[in-house]
Length: 86
Image (cartoon, rainbow, N blue to C red; front, side, top):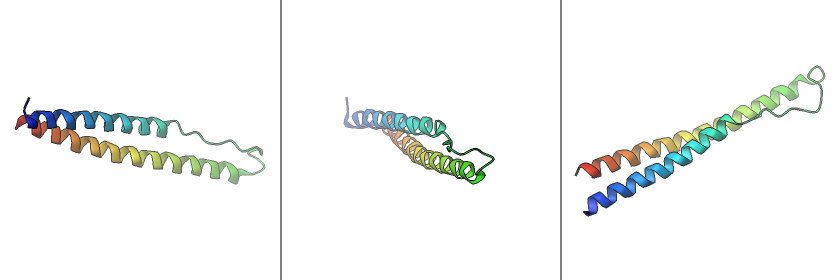
């Protein structure tokens, strides 16, 4: 196996690892739950709004990390493809 083919396989394996990491972040982002305050919704509506905002922020943070890892997957996979053709 030539050096370029070994590099292509290495980049493909790194792309697979990055894809798994991205998938885990996407999954975690979809599983963020809205915390339920102890008070009744008729008593303190702001607590429910605040809980929703916290959940949205956490989901957004996880989505942004997943998007970064997905970009890394694209770069690694493209590099593996180019090296495989050479």
